[in-house]
Image 1 (cartoon, rainbow, N blue to C red):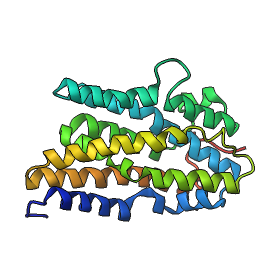
Image 2 (image 1 turned 135 degrees about the vertical axis):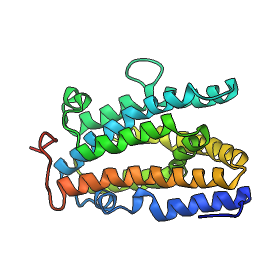
Image 3 (image 1 turned 120 degrees about the vertical axis):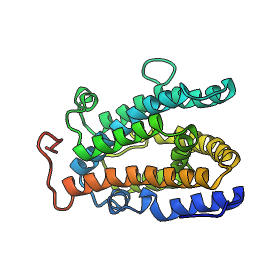
Image 4 (image 1 turned 90 degrees about the vertical axis):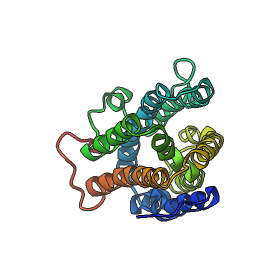
Length: 243
């Protein structure tokens, strides 16, 4: 257990080290997705399961928004809901993700029904929503800091998928373009907040633990996909089965 208070700069360095070690761009399933080693059904399974995560992000942010103590903080965090839910039907990140699943040939009603989810996906995503709902505001904000590392994985994912899959187009992947600017904006704010408000050893432990937890959520989602659809290919009853 850490027993010395870190400077804000050292805390940031520790957070970035967690990402370098634990972010899911290192997961074998991501590497296979990026390198073109998955078939169409496996890519469909990834997109379908990831939809639940994308659709749960605004719900997660809404639980935190209700607990933020100032109007300035609420205005800042409210932008995240607008980014994902949009400001009209058919806009926002969740709608763009459904455009992705449409482009992969998945039935939209089936995707939205969540009937084909892996149990591991459901448990991981709901654990994240509950973490943000139940932990301190500081820990909840810190758990969003995986966005520090997302521009790298987005660039890898888009370039790799366009290069390696003939059933993927730039239009299919339109979800990712706004995230290249939204994620850095959001992570800059969250990082500044954490560096300012993590003022005790206990608070800094909580911040570091929150980022480790969130990395674990993303990693475990890929673990579930890898086990079900790659090796050994053991798809649970009721989960999506590629045709």
